[in-house]
Image (tube, rainbow, N blue to C red):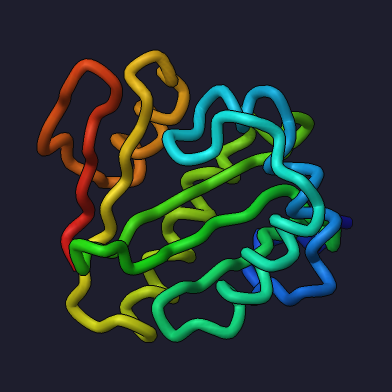
Length: 160
């Protein structure tokens, strides 16, 4: 007699970040690897500064922050934000224990879906430090095209 089992495979989900996610995001942004990879934040962020930043972002129509969960646990965040040049910039962070498992590619695919709904036609732009080889590979795998490079970072674009 043969039987079949239907095992449930956990799926990655994105949910909008809220101010209540402040401590989680604060801990992630202050991780040494996050600070080293960031073009914007080069020093540890103070709590009050972070909370003000987060409150501003979650209420803005020009920014979306999502918490990625896998099997019910938070594993990272992804953000899209319209910059001063009207481009839609991407930021991603994956918690160290969740790296190397394909979650980054899934997070960027889910972000693409979210961004099309929120900002139709907008291309997604990622700026990645030259030395951040894992992020460069991630964006290339996720369908972003290298469009520019300078001494500090490379620019990748995924058409909207």
